[in-house]
Structures are given as C-alpha cells and as structure tokens.
Length: 330
Image 1 (cartoon, rainbow, N blue to C red):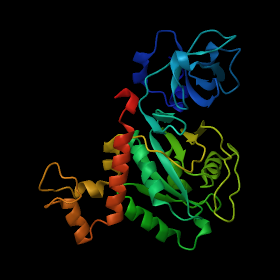
Image 2 (image 1 turned 30 degrees about the horizontal axis):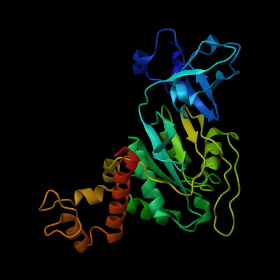
Image 3 (image 1 turned 90 degrees about the horizontal axis):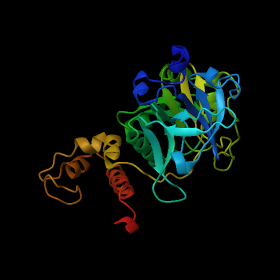
Image 4 (image 1 turned 90 degrees about the vertical axis):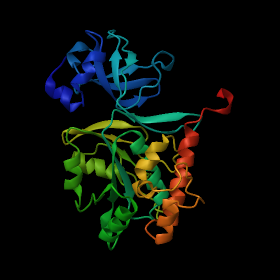
C-alpha cells in the first residue's frame, strides 16, 4: 500500500490491509480537535495539496456519520482534496477507556495501543487507588502497564519508594526516572521502538517533561506545580501522538478523577495475588464470610492485606456496574 518505512513508523500492521477498501486513502489520527482530526497519511502523495511537510492532513469529522475518531485510530478519508473528510474508522485492535465524565457509558482515550506508562510523581503523596484504577484500565485495553515514578531527584530514597510500589503491584514493571538527571531514561527508551505507548497520569506528574526529554525537543508545553499540594496545571490540553525513538507516544491531559469503565476480568488481572488466593471450598464464594474461603484465610495468615482485598472488592463492583446498561435500557 505504501512505503514500508513510513507504514512501520506509524504503527501500521499488514493484517489491516484486508479491512481497507481498494484504493482507499488511509491514515492514523495523531490529534483530534472539535469537528476535526489531524491525520498522518500512509501515502502523503495521494493528497499533495492538502498535507503538511510531515505528511499530515486536517480532516473534518462527523460523529453522525462515523462516530468518534480518537488519537491512534486508523481512518479512511474521502478523496476530496478541497474538503478532506473522514469516511470511516477502521476496526480497533483495542481501546483505552474510562467512564464518560459528562455522561453515561465510556469515553475512549486512545486506540490501537501496545502499552501504557502510568506516570506518578515522587514529589507528592502516592495515591494507591489511582494507580490501581489506571492499571485496571490498561488491562481492560489488553495493553501492558508500566508504572513510571518520575522526579527521583526530588526525594531522598527513590529506590525505597520504588520497592514499595513494586510490592503493591505484582507483575507490573516499575521504572524510576528523573527528567533532570536522566535516571531511568534508558529503560524507558528501550520500551518504545515499534510500539504505540500512552502516557497516563495526573497533572504535574511529569508526563510532558518525560516526553520532551525522550523526544529531544519541546514536543509539548511543560507547566509548574503548586507548592502547597504539588498539583499541576493542565499544560497538555489534548491527546496527541508523537514519534519518539522509533516508536509512537501519546501524551494525554492530566486527570484528577477517573471513573472506571472496564470488564471485571481486568480487575482480576490487576490483583493476581487476590485471585491466586481463591482456593475456596465453594465455587460461588463471595470472599466475604463463607467457611473455607481461601481469600479470607490469606488475610488471616497475613499473606494478603485487608486493604488490598477491600480495593479488589470495590473496583470489581465498580467495573461490574459500569458494564450494566442504564436503567432506561433494562
């Protein structure tokens, strides 16, 4: 369909070819705006008068025609150079999603991703629930989570903090970084080639600084944090795809609250220690009061903390509720 090097740099996979109409103009959404998307074309010479020097074109979108196109989507464009419009969105491999903050159902943050770097700053109190929620989201997208602890230069013992986070999140890699000193950046760079990666975390956690130092230039604006609570200002205002180290990185705006929208199995994947303890006498055990419950036995033995079990129960209930249709549909 196109130059193999450009296709690879945009994350194209040959198996998508079968879903593309013959002769279609195809590209990947690098930034959505209201009523528009910026699309990196596989074949920029198909629209020579509309693309910029990097092969990106602005295209209109109509939700009543195609639904919502998000960063990372692969789209087919109408062949109308004077008024480029998205004709369709190709089927997604996966989607990183959360509960819609302004309505019912889901909001898709990014599509066709491989991994998510869950970014947390060491210059502020660690919010265990936030990390757990983010990791559930990543598992729900069937992507790989990596916890990235930034601002290692701001604390006395970053290694101890990392050890505590690793102990609380079995089976998730934890990387300690500093955009100022360069600690951990080689480990992050090794994760990027050939993958689409999302940076996810609250405002002020250091996502933009990390992206800029990885990209070697000012790819996005960096803001200050407030001294009193270390919370950041929203310097990233939209989701955008950047090419970094032979990979693709999506920067996302920081969020202070995340409503969970996920399949319950994604919670199980986030709490493998709880699931491993489910050697219960009864197959329908609720792990709340039944005799012979393996989970309660693990808590009594001290191999599973009550707070860990409480978090599992709460997130499992929230995930289950998120998949139930609204009352008006029942």
